[in-house]
Image (cartoon, rainbow, N blue to C red; front, side, top):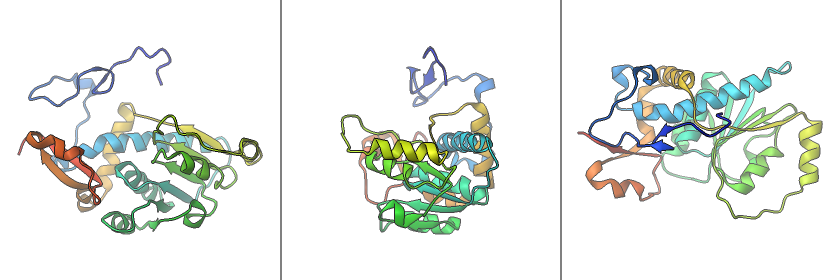
Length: 242
């Protein structure tokens, strides 16, 4: 949320990432994980993104008397599945919408106690109180905006590709957002407290379920293989040591 853009971030802006044999990080920026989470610790960064997303949603919801019950997560990649995990941990009725009809995604959602859907938004979850949008698919982004319950919140975590033009009834969308007191908010990345909240969420999750999110592990010597998308991929990890 830096206003002047004069920040740095490893692997993202002006600083190299951690893909090296050795690196140094300031201790005050390091978040310790339980050693038992070594195999799934790579999920902490995406979990921090969702910890921030849920924090933003809850802060917006607290503007009024707000008792959310249903959440719709669009997209069942690593971000979407972790969004669903944090929703379940909050005691909400969670629905996940994705295009995949096979592979590991439906089972991962079911094992959370959530409900998996394919098809239109309207068939997946009627009047969700919260939508965590994790695809960035332009049409889907607008579809969820019009599917909200009154006083509902859409949190956008997915990035849309530029250049695609859609036809949208802007007047109807504006009217619905205003009269229903709905909110659309975007969120990206996180700070230390969100990493800590993400670590807490992962620590409370089933380790076996988390392990199943990582569908392939590729040694660094064969890193191009990690960039080749396969039908059953969820999270692909590049390993720097055996």
